[in-house]
Length: 264
Image 1 (cartoon, rainbow, N blue to C red):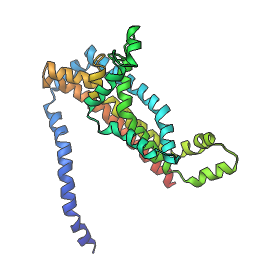
Image 2: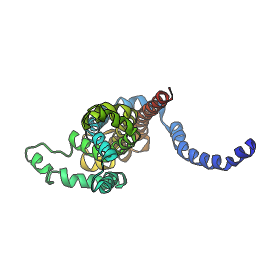
Image 3: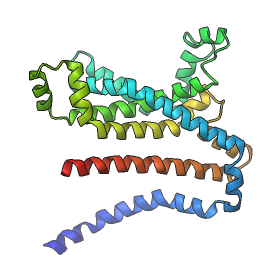
């Protein structure tokens, strides 16, 4: 029986291996094609360092904003029962399926120098586009759905009985959220925030439309690719892959730590 069951898994393993090969082969080939002698000079270039710093700073600011705004929204969707809840959920999902350039156009219409929000700022020489603010706006728009969706799932996994016990002790709605739901759902929320940070860090399409300058790391990679060629973009791509790998490792570490705590 054991051998028969394992034999039945062979076709599934073969199909999975094909996808794994498809996903891994570009990365392996990239490492062989990388002009390693040029990497140190490319990565220490002031523009590369500046673009990395811009991406890290703006993605962190965007993540803080997403935590302040997206986590409470995820909680309301998980626990609230109100008219239009389904429509609100649909609106939150929409930025995930918009083509990135379309997201940038929508933001430009609103926050650009001729938009209803951007124009008053532009009139006093505080343009929201082509600035750090524009980059953060683009990052929050494309990445916040990740935070909201993951936070909602984390809050839905909290046992409602814990809330009922807190309510019988006289705790109000905000106290229950802060002292019961938030600590219990913490691991899932942190994982969602890390995913949001990674999505913001890698944002290109909306950013290049709304805030081409200052360069973020994805935009600078595109500038190198379009202006100098593939070889010049490869070291910058390596930098992006390194930063992304660290972020993904942190997500796995948070999830593994949460599983170990639950198993104890």
